[in-house]
Image 1 (spheres, helix red, strand yellow):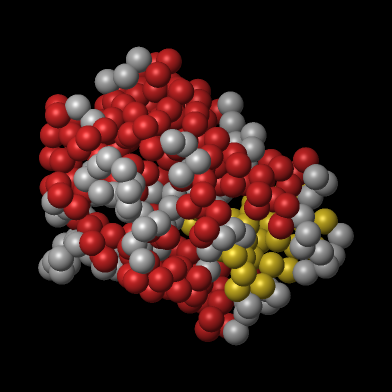
Image 2 (cartoon, helix red, strand yellow; image 1 turned 120 degrees about the vertical axis):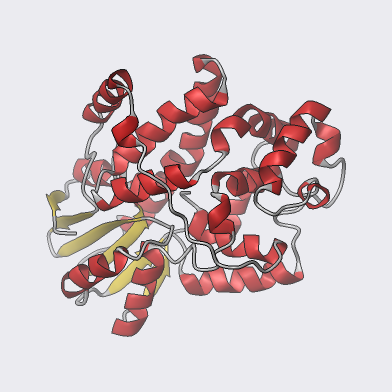
Amino acid sequence: MILMRLFAPLLFLFLPAAVQAACEGNDLRPGLSPAVKSELQQAVADIPFPEGNHWIASKGDTTLHLVGTLHANDPRMDAVVERLTPALSDADAFYFEVTQDEMDAFEQDLAKDMSPVMITSGPSLIDLMSEEDWSALSDGLSERGIPGWMAAKMRPWFLSMMLGIPPCMMQDPTANHGMDARLDQLADELGIPKRSLEQIADLMSMFDSHPIEKQVQSLVRMAGAMGGSEDQLATMANAYLEEKHVEIIQLARLQGLEDSGLSPEIFDEEWNDFEQKLLVERNSNWMQKILNIQDQTVVIAVGAGHLGGDYGLLNQLQQTGYTLTRAPF
């Protein structure tokens, strides 16, 4: 879900029009066993900055409003944006992972040339997987309205994202209108400049950094853990609005291990690679731009999962001399 806002619009290029369907899942946390609850609490307790979706980082005349976002739509976010508006309205700029304008341009380009997400030469996924693995993968994709003949020519990382999106969201063209999309709109309404922390081309290069055979191996290994459900979406949305962003990631890790059927060693190998690329390396790249911001007040709106942790933006800012203060959300 971390990059859903970027790629969810692209999914609709591949799917037939469908009637909008609301996701109505249940929060999984009350039903967790005492052992899992204890393990989750212990994991969260050992991580820096585990909570808070709005932090103010200050150093000299530089003020950064770091706002953790969720890329999936939830009507409860409207009230959050209303509460945040007075604090953010004096910003000199809004920084996003990727601005909406750049995403719109990329989507238009992709409609003309789908090679960034398609296998354009060499064997298809059917040729690269066992019959059993392809059958299991096809079942999950068919639930999302994606026929096997189309999926066979899609890049493995793109299919991984599709599997992570609950089927109900695949039928909702407003699914990606999350907190960052709302803040992007707010910046437009306030007439405040918007900037991107990364380029879409760099993201594409990151996804394709492994040979396709390695991508297929990871897709097969993690297929059981990728199947996003309505309950998982509800759990994530509730935890997000409770400002428990580290809990979201740690619960996903615990559930992923169980659902994957993999040994802890193999699962950790896959998870750590995912975390290194999507969180650690991207945070490091963003920090290079963030630290160049001087004598301004800016908003940095990024996925909430990028805030906490040893390599999270908050911890890195504190280590570079910023004073961190949790603010109302």
